[in-house]
Each structure stands twice: as C-alpha cells, then as structure tokens.
Length: 303
Image 1 (cartoon, rainbow, N blue to C red):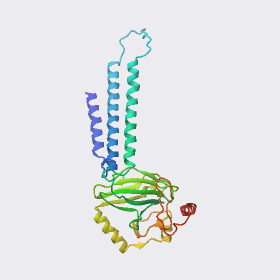
Image 2: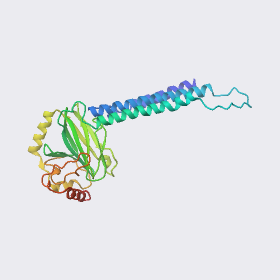
Image 3: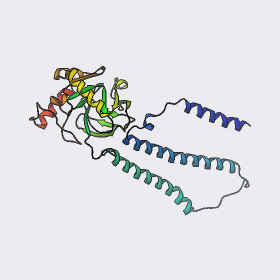
Image 4: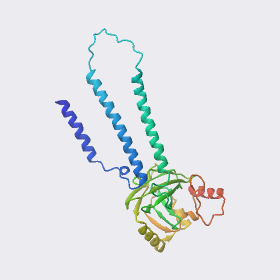
C-alpha cells in the first residue's frame, strides 16, 4: 500500500510540474530552420527516453529478482572469462546510437547552414545584425534604413543575417526561427533563416556579455512582404538620418529603447571584410584598404 501511494505521489508531482510549464519556444517553430532543429530535439529526447526507461526497467528487475542471495554463506562463484554477446550488446548499442545521432547532426547542420528549404531560388533579404553593450543594430543595406532593438522581416522570403559585434562576443538567437550563432568583433558570421508565419517573436543575445546581458533583447515582427515594403516606405519618409556622431553615441555602454533611422552605419563604419561572408557596403570609405577599415573598427570598439 505504501509503495502504491509513493508511486501516485511521484506521478502527481510530475504532472503538476508539467502543467505549470509554458510551451518551449524552440518546440514552437515558425520557420523551416527551426522546424528541422525542433524535430532533432524531439528525436534526441525520444532516444534518451527509451534508454532511460530501459535502464530503470533493468534496474528494477535486478533489485527485485536479486535482492537476496539463495546461496550458502561459504559459496564462491566460479571464474568467468566473459560473454562475447553481452559485451557486443553493451558496446555495440551505444556506438550505434552515437553514430546515428552524429549522422543526423551533420545532416541537419548542412541543412540549417544553407538557404532555407523552399527558398533556394529566391533572392534573400540581407540584414546586418550587430551588437554593442547592450543593444542590437539592424542595418538593411538594400532598403538603406537601420533600426535599434527591433527587427521587421517579411514572411515567405529567405533571410540572410550578417552577424558581428562592436563589443564583446554575443549570440544572435530567435528561438522560433532557428538556432543561435555568434557575433564577434573580428569577423562576420552568416546565418540563414526564414519566417513562414506572420507574428511577433522574441530575440535576444544568448551569450553572457556583462551586467547588461539580461536586457540585451530585441523584438521581431514578421509580416507579409507588401506590409514590409509599406513599412520601409514609411521609415524613409519619417525617420531621421543616422549620423556617425549618433552611432558613436549608441555604441556607448547602456540600454536604450527602440529607434529607427534612414541610412546605415555601413557607410561610415562597415563590418570587417572577408571571413565567413563579410561584405563592405560602405560608400564613403570604399577606397580604404582592409587594414584602414579594421583599424577604424577597432578604435570605435574601444570607444
């Protein structure tokens, strides 16, 4: 009777805890990259659950069946060299599991690192996403606008983010659209995403970067491309231009709200060129050498 009530108490506790949990954003995908990663997570959870249940089942059987010995006190077990089949099972099954998960991981990595499925033939929207302590700067070079701490994107169109930092290493992450990727000061990383469903999503820096890390977040709004085009037109008519002085002010450590500008900082402070997809869209200093651009970037980084 006591065992029965103990079991019911455990079940009740687990159910109570699960019903109080909010849905995990990574398991509520709104884009092809996130869907692939969510399926991999569920696959891993399923395999681990089978392993855990099997181990606990064997443990319970061993504890119940062999909880007391029926042999004499002076009994000495015979010398056994081993059993080849038991050893094959104990070693082979983990090797097969690791090999399978490794295959799935490599395959998924190739998928999420390339253009989103279904968008291979479509021209992506390029957004330069940079960070400073503790802000997010989103530059749209084709639209010639820039936002701070919020991101508007069109649905049903591939997104190509160019990630870099004007401060410490950060990590760009929109859980419902895809996995995170680092933004660093000496190179540009490329992240491919897409949003299939209009809506508002949460984005944040997923890498600890100092005391302001907790509020280093940004809002994401996905909308039909026609609405996105209307928003771009409105920004160009109403927003103030982004000057170098204003951008220097934004780079100073601290928190600010959301803001919108015409023009981008790519014109006077471009990201580092070269490594992993970096491009220079600047116009005023396009004739500068790579060394001059890097020196200018470094000076502003330590501003």
